[in-house]
Structure formats: structure tokens, C-alpha cells
Length: 213
Image (tube, rainbow, N blue to C red; front, side):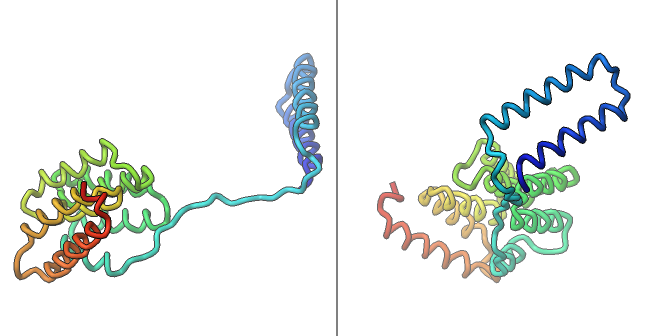
């Protein structure tokens, strides 16, 4: 849409609002002067002859990972109070609504302030909202609360390790995953999965010696 047309439309709409709003006539000159000044500035520095190019907001989304969902459910369990909030946060994060994901977890924590699962998920949600490159103090506190609330559960340590891998701290991730594996029951269905991930992490560290320092 041409810039001159939009400018004219804006001027007409403003004049109509002045009339309908019964603005006193002495103020008409002030409003008119302001509009003319804005129009002059647009004509001087803008490019009104260019056609419009409407753009939609770009939202970064995350692809679905059903394997990750299965592992999450195996580690934490399903159909519990905190499960519903964690799954809701996962869906929002995949849609790119990272702030909404954080809010969803916070809503769950209001009802379950001692949920190690939700504190851990809050750390992950904050990391994603911050761009996924730096573990902020708020995210660190959330992970620490998760481990303190569920000290004998592998979940907080495993997902803290995932966060450390994301920011490039491979030695820290290995320590977290070793702690997670030590807390995993021998008969757990996901124990072999965690052990294999630890082996792959060791191989990755061997390929990147600088990451092990």
C-alpha cells in the first residue's frame, strides 16, 4: 500500500476524530500544525512512494521430539499434577512462546511449590526464554531448587546436564549425568538410555578436548 495513501488516510481519520470528539476550535490549529509537521518530516526523510510490504511476526519454533517426550515421561511419570503443567510448558516452548512456557510452570509451582519436576522445568524454560546460550542466575536457582527438592531423583540432575550441554559446559554436564545415573534404579526402563547418553557425551568430549577443560 502506497505511503501517500496511508498518510492521507491518517489525516482524514484524525480530522474525523477531532470532529466527533468535539474538540474546541482553538485547538484545531495546534492539532493541524502537528499533523502537517509530521507529514513534512515523512515527505522529507521517508520513502512514501514505496509499496507496502506487510510482514508477520517471526516466531522461532522447536520441532517435536517424541523420543524426548517418552524419556521425560519415563523419568518423571505421567498423569500427575505437575505432569500437566510440564507438558503445557513443553507445547508452548515448541511453539516459540517461551515467556508463556515460563508462566505455565510458575502457575504450577503455585499449587506445588515442592515439585522437583516443576523447579527443574522452570530452569529449562528460563534458559529457552533467555536464548539458550547462557544459564542465567534465575535458571541456576531453579535447577538448584529442583535438585534440593528431589535430591534422590535422577530427573533434576539429568535435565540440568542437558542445560549445561546446551551452553557448552560438557564437564559440568558429565558430572550432572553421572549423578543422575547414580540415582536411577537399576530396574528403571530408562537407565540404559541415560547410560548410553553418558557414553556419547564422553565421546563428544574426546572429540573436543578444549571442551573438557
